[in-house]
Every structure is written in C-alpha cells, then in structure tokens.
Amino acid sequence: MSDILSCLLNCLTFIELFLKIRTKDGSVISFLLNEPQRRLYQVIREQWQKGKPVRIIILKARQMGFSTLTEAIIFWMAVTAFNVECMIVAHKDEATKNLFRMSKRFYDHLPDKLKPMQQSSNAQELVFAKPSRHKGSGKGLNSRIRCATAGGDGIGRSYTLRALHLSELAFWPGDKLDTLTGLLQAVPDLPGTLIVIESTANGFEEFKKLWDKAVAAQREGREDFIPVFFAWHEMKEYRRTPPPDFQRTEEEEALAATFGLDDEQLAWRRWCIDINCGGDINKFKQEYPSTPDEAFIATGQCVFDKQKIVLRREQVRKTPWERGMFRFEEDITGRIISWKWVPDPAGPIRIRVHPEQGVPYVIGGDTAGTGSDWFVGQVLDNRTGEQVAVLHQQFSERMYAQQMYCLGKYYGDALIGIETNYSTFPEMMIEQLGYRKLYVRQRLDNFTGKMVDAYGFETNKKTRQTVIDSLKDVAHGALETITDYETLGEMLTFVYNEDWRPEAEADEHDDLVMALAIAHHIRSQQRTTVTVSTAGKTVRWTQDMKDDYNRATPAEREMLLRMWGEPQ
Image: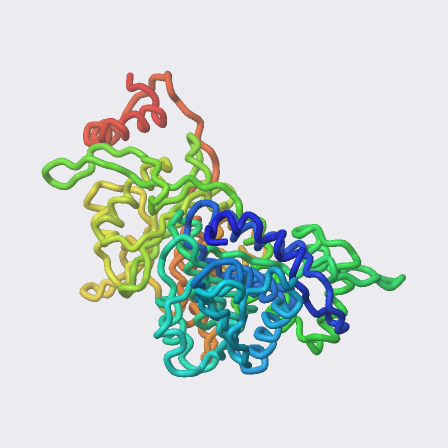
C-alpha cells in the first residue's frame, strides 16, 4: 500500500495474522500482542492518526517485547510501501544479530502472495528490489531494513530514513550523544515517520537525560518525544504461586497498596530479586522498576528514604495544580500598587490550594546561585507544614522579588524567608516594596561586635545541616505534607557526596529541596492558628494601623479591613 495512514489502520491485523515469532522454548508461533505491547501500539497509532511524526521514548522493565513490536511495525512499513528506508541500532553485536534474525523470520514466514521481491539478505540488512518494468517479475518496492551496532563512526549520517529504532540506548558504547545526534537528523520531521527509543535504565547517563526532558515537555504541554513507561507488574507472566506461609513485608504492603499488586506478583518479585538479581534489590528496581524513579539509580546514597519518596511521588503524580503568575501595576517609584493572580498553563507558579482567610502561611526562598539554577519559593500552610504552592522559574532577580512579594501578599502576608548567600538583592527589594512579614535572623555586626537583627536566611555549614536534618525529619514523620511531584523528584537525587556532604547528584538540582528546608526552618516565626475575621465589626485603630492602611494598595486595604475590622 502506498498510503501510510490507511496502511496503519490495518497494521495490527497484518502483524497478528501474518508475522511469526520465536518463543523462549524455541517454538515459532503467530505474533499476538501482550497487554504492554498493545498499549504501546495504541500510542503509536494515535500519533500517526493525528498526522504527526511519531516520536516515542520507552522506559521499561526487561523482556516485555517492545523490540519485537517495533521490529514488526518497521517490517510492515518496509513491505507494504515503496521507498521506505528503515534502520535498527542495537547496543551490541549479538543484539543486532538477534534483531536482524527477527526481521528475517518475519519475511521467511510471510505468505508468498505478500512477499515483496528480495534483492539481498545478509547479516546486516534486508533489501527489497527496485521496481521492475517487466511484467511478471514480482513486486519491487525499493525498500530496506538495515541493522547496525552502536559505537561505529558515522552511523546513519548519510541516510534519509522513514523509520528508526534505537534499542537499549542506555547501554550503547562510545559517544552515544554524538551517535544519537547523527541518527535523529537522518529522519525528516514529517508525518509518516517513526522514531522509537527504548531501553531499560542504566544509572544517570544520556538516556535518563532524554527521558527527563521528554517528561518535562509532556508536563508543560510542549511537543517532544512522548515518554511511555512500563512497570514490571504490567506483564501478566510475572507472577508465581506464593508458598503457604507467605506473609507480606511492610515494603510489599506499600507496593500492593500503591499499585494494586496481589500475592502472586509479590511472590514473583521476591523470586526475581533472589534468583535473577542475586539478592540485590537495587538491581531489581533498575531492571524491573515499578515507577520511572525506581529505574534510575543515583551513584550516591540518597539523603532521604528513596523507596518512600518513590511511592509518595507516584501517589501525587496526577494531583492537579493550577499554573499561573501575578500581574501587577507599579507607580513611578517602582512600588507595586495593585496585583492579581492570572492562570497561565506556562506560568512559573503552581498552586494546589489557594489561600484561606485567616490561615497562616510561610514561604521559603532559594535564589539562583549559578546560571543553571532556579529561583524558588515554597509555600506552606503553617498549621500543618503542608505544601500548597511552589514558585519555580529562572527569573531575573527583580522579577523573582516581585513575584515573591505578590505571592506573600496573596497568601495573607505570609512570613517570607529568602536565602541571601549569593545575592541580597531579592530580599532587599521585597523590603523596599514595603513587605513587613520577613524572617529575622541574628548576625554579628562587624563594626560594633554585637549581635543584631537581619532579614533573610544565611546558609553556612551549620545552618545548612540544621535545615536539611529538619527536612529529613519531615520526610520521615510527615511525608504526606510534601505534595509537589517536582520537589519529590529533587529529593530522590539529593545524595551524600564523597565527603558525606548532602547535595544534588551531578547534573541535577536541589533548589526546590533547599527552599522547602528553609520554609520548614522559619515556621517558628509564624503563628500556627487561624485568625478570626473581624469583617463588619468596628474597632479602635492605632496610629500605626492607620499609617499602614494609608500606605496600602486597594487590594491590601481590603485585606486589612478583613483582619482588623472597620475603624471607629
């Protein structure tokens, strides 16, 4: 068929009717998709039906059959359309040979009436002959399936490909980024093209970076490779009859509750850890993950309980947050005279719980120390310590200070404490804007030699360890108060380095972690009870109250009236 879209609608039928695979016991049978394969097929089909180039990145447990399905789709493309150039790249020679033998088996068992003319076949490629002008000479398609092993120079750079399968990318030898760049450029960004990258995890390397980039793009609504994860428990075959005395451990109870696992699946998990993974549970999590976070093993020891963070992150993964930012007006001096919250899907602030009247809030801030770091604000309900909003963006310092000012005002004059190590500008600007509820610390006055009050949080060796230890206590005893998916993600890569100093894993960030730690540290300077509204009541105002009211913006005046009541 020449119409790729109309062919695709029949792709599944073609695969299950005509293609044969070899099973683990050596039998050759019809290729009937398992449930994970069927889910992947639907993702690919939906993109093609939308008229989009198909770009998929797959993070998977071992032996789920995605290479088999991808080869089947590529084979179907090459034998049902003219001039289709396809390429399959594996991580080692033996895998390359296996994938070629798979395609060759598809061809050998294809009904004769469906077989295109074959020009040649060797250990690296299947070539379907050029169309012939002579009648009765068979069907020539001028299509080709090439197989190659990663690590060679210039793989794919001279080709123009319709379909590309990159298998076990995390285990490629050599400069995988250079090889990957050349291969991806060989596939035009056009409808009817296909790129599938699939791999089990292999620690922190290029595949993880590609996966994280695709996940971030998906969460932000940007077009990129579609990330598709497959957990081990999606395979129906991964189960064993539990022994009569089988009892779940605490960890297994948590897994069962989070993922709906039964005893047969848990019994298989125990068996696989013991037999296939040599008793190494971290190896099992990498090879047979329950979540993407389990798959990627950091090189350092995680500061927090990784398994609990992984499960918590899965629990909050679909929690709805509203994104947006504050729009404001300034007077000629730069003072903010009015502000309002504006929803925006691409906004730098995400809110889970909007402010409630009279509830006390605190905001911990971490400023960008280098060009790659982020400006962060973590908003907590001070009654419980629960995260309710997060500011997370690479602002300029001025924009950061302005958004933090509005965020504090929005949350009822929340207590704000911003780290001042790299720059005091955001803290000073918020002061200049007239914000009064700021965290106060004690510092040594070098001129007088006395301890004096100072605004902002200063990080040093002692205070850093103190706030991190406090956050460890929160993660241990009140993990349910940490509700932000991205913050939990940073906690997974917050590790002890060689000197036992807690910090972000190489190429990762800890801005969200540190801002959350600061927010919890400053909570003691904010009340923990709800103030009763005095709206509609009349009270005697002090001169200070009158001065504050006269200096306030219209929005601030409304808030003050709710807090204090009408003046007598």
